[in-house]
Amino acid sequence: MSDWWYRNIIEPGKLPLLLALASFVLTFLITRLITRLIRAGKGPFRNISGSGGVHIHHVVPGVVLIVVGGFGAVGSGSTGWWAGISAVLFGMGAGLVLDEFALILYLDDVYWTERGRKSTEAVVLTASLAGLLLCGFLPFGVNSLTDEEQHDRAALILSVLISLLFSLIALFKGKARMGVLGVLIPFVALIAAVRLARPGSFWDERLYARRPRARARAVKRAARHDARWAVPRRRIQDWLGGAPDQ
Image 1 (tube, one colour):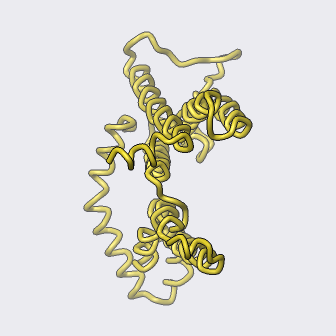
Image 2 (spheres, helix red, strand yellow):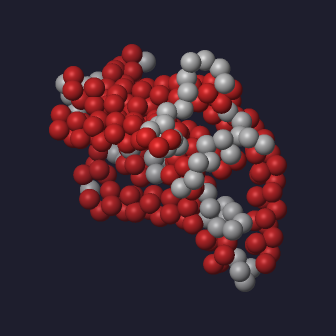
Image 3 (cartoon, rainbow, N blue to C red):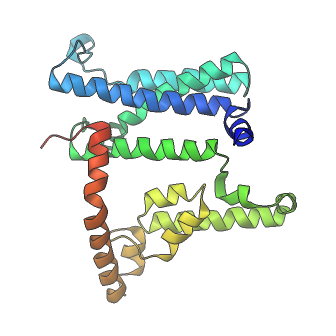
């Protein structure tokens, strides 16, 4: 266990990623705590406004931190104290930006609305991907190949293309979460690729238009899935980011 911890977490090459992930999660949690206190009218925190009464969203300092941390990381390499500082700055900036991901997506202040849940989803998905990378998972199943297969360019390229195909099919079928996670865990993308598409997805509109039975099965399965998981997912999102306004 100690060897795995050092090899995958503490070794110099992984330390910046660990610092970035930790600062990313902490920044998101602290930001949500502050915004919830502001929303409730408690504590000393207040919204920040610029000249003319323009509300300054925290995505603005987040972009600045991402730029500073990103360029600092590129210039410093993967080791040294500046690499660690850059990783922390980048993680903080990413936490601030993705906390308002819905605002960027819809170009509207939807922070405490139903559409604002997209921000929490983006944060959870990003943290999951970073955690998988930290644990040693590599994109498109490369980590599952043997040393001989990795030296064989044809086998490596074929593995990457097949894994990418599964992820793209999952995205076309309206299963964005599984498609993105499938970049690191191809088996997840494979499951999404072989199952029915979500109603309203690109796959549904293009390939189920002349297959009414398949479309009916897809609608039924999606309704059953949503009935089972929608409420628990919303409760987790409300616990992490706060419930939207009614």
